[in-house]
Length: 517
Image 1 (cartoon, rainbow, N blue to C red):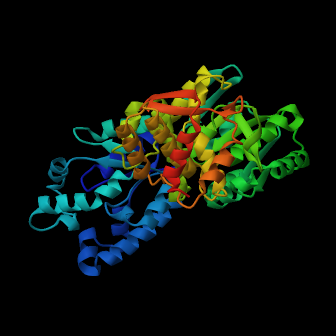
Image 2: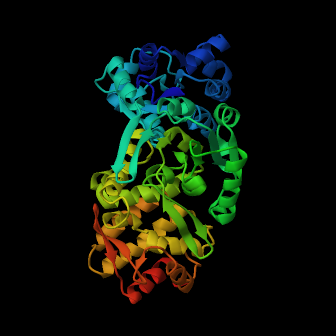
Image 3: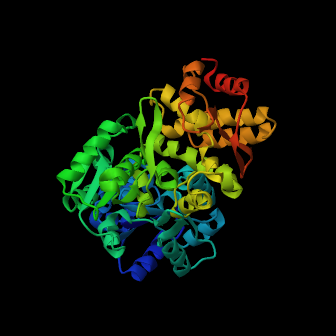
């Protein structure tokens, strides 16, 4: 795993990079210095003689080269990651820390430097402010933000080193005795972690075609070549009894027994299936969940629920069978398509509504989400709820917020809507019900809708039929005595469960989110 230090000119990328690399025993590469050495000219000379376009071409070559290496500390040039291609190459190789400082501090640091071509000439303060304004959206888009104001390079390095430490979150409840490891670069260390945890024995890795295709070559080699593996077709439509039977066949083919370990490397769909196969094969074998989507990291990988779908509804066949260990690596999120990452935010937002009003307030102004600390905090909401109610006899039902209607919407779309997209729409509908019950003031609903939209989630599903959604909701597991039971918010950080809602209110909410389809 590489460590990439990015930020505006004068933020301290080079000085911090040298210090951090020395502390870690790594090589530090300043991309601009490397370009200048290869060109035999200074950066200002390259700009003056060859032009910015030629410099950016050279910069892209260096980013590709560095992104293919490992265990480096890298400082790209200030404009390097304006290129989405450069950003992908470097983010795929490691974690980006964006170093920040105010314009006054930056200008003071740059005043003695003569190698900043974009700030050369008169009015450097005006040019710097224009540059910061033009790049603010880019800088804000990195989840890991580190202030260097009034901090020495050594102090900034300490902050970064602390953030590189993995989080270990214990989940302890009747039937749930495992840990969640969350940290940068853990995926590369998977075999080592299994040995450290004494999770040994015949091992089989199960992943899906999307994950297998998007993991970089080094990680594919780690898993596909060092561990026996099975690659399943991707998608909710394959979360069924036929795929389950194939898993049993593969388990037998690879000689698994009661002492074996099955590793699920994928999103929530794959984790549910592999976990259920592990629960029922030879009356239960151990499994390790390695979630690769935002949704599965904060939600689906936790709590021990496993299962497959039937044509009549989701997760109608299942069991509680917690993994022996959960290993989450936020770097994997950089491989996700934008829409897939956005879909995961539905569960993140749901958790804040259940029990973290402070993080919800942060999301109202945030431009990015996905740092290890943010993920650990968010998934801890579910951990607390599950520990209090491991078998869903009470408060754990709050985790169904948005799901009673959301599952109906998802099924009615023929699973064309992603799970998180459907949950966002379901959350909107259930907020409208809470409004009609006079539990939630309309301004809370507007705040939640604004956050959903901020992170690219839909709040309506025009074209879906209300009657069809309602019919599919009746097949949902979230009912008691033949009646649907809802989890509904009374405010941010306050959700009640087990609520029976009048039929006319359900239909009114469905009409509102479908546009009367």
